Image 1 (cartoon, rainbow, N blue to C red):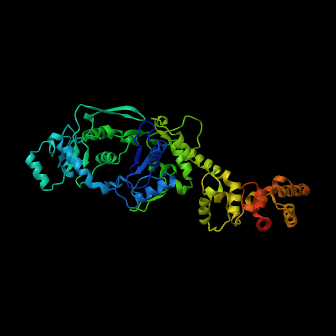
Image 2 (image 1 turned 90 degrees about the vertical axis):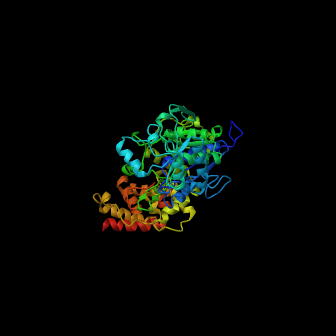
Image 3 (image 1 turned 30 degrees about the horizontal axis):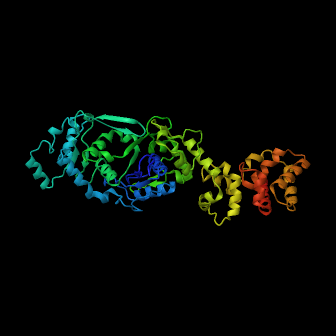
Length: 509
């Protein structure tokens, strides 16, 4: 229930199934979700598929998968059902015409019979042409055609649209939950199409009818929709529903890293980072657009970073679980200004979440990484030990292989160049001797190994630094990895000695 009324909060996320889900779209559903759950309310997923020319097969399923990956599961949806369905606008088609017809009957809308070709001609003749009070009396519509001619055109099934008749010289306003009172001069707004020639509603009519019928109490959407607000406010009024119009919040944009304009897919392609939640393959072109999930982001980190793009709880805290975000969320803390997207900061969030996660949370992802390298059937105990050594070094989930792949597969190449120039027969003798002595070393633990190895170096008269790096390269193949004695301890005696022998052979080859 809402904290300030006895009416249950109902919010909706209403995407169009036209392609990948931009991180701005995910943030919109996130803020909807956080507000609803903080108020004990429900989130509704409504698919706005009225524009059949832009419909893309598979896009709806992709959107649902994205929301489930993020943990933002709707309470009502096309998949789950509910008391206010159908939840696809294409399945609600017959509901819209009656309202469009009523608006015409009441004088708030009109039929327009202009053909696409006639409108194109107008655009050529008139710079910045818009269908509005400035020219509607000269165009082909029911406002200036004789009534009998309009009736004849309708009976003959001549293609037409229904347009709202925007009033002239009025001020339309509403109180935005983020921006305060916002007002518009109706003379500056064109007569938007409400019902298309194919009988499908446009966004303007559908969003009002659906929000009314689904009892939506609060609506969050991007600030790019603000110019459409006067049309929607008038529709709520003209249809007699103004008293139950949802409260609106127009969210700030997510901006390019330099702050200069809205972040787009092209920016991500240009700068080398994803802007979609998950991989999306365009079924028409086959083009793959990479997503945060496949790059190696944890869903908790993705949600966390999005929440802080335009919102904060007033503290210095940056790492929030979804439940913490629900508990702390308030609309008053959403900024009016756009938020710059910083990919390095996004990776920092993921690094922090990896560090905070235990094996039970990370194991499914790590096993996916291992499977890509044909490593299967790894025991949980061993995986947990490996993870404990490398997770501080991981920023993205695939980093697990880069940081720890040698724990599962012995190196096949060695960074010989790092040590070859300073190699000597004394070093060869040292490794032959220590490999032999290691055969009898017990217990095989990190601390004992380190003590044993360093005593051997001291006894040899050689320098510590010159013998630590070759040892590491023999075990892992290069100059990387956690503490070398931790590596040897986890690999075990047999495997470590076998690798040292092969590494020495590679150096001497």
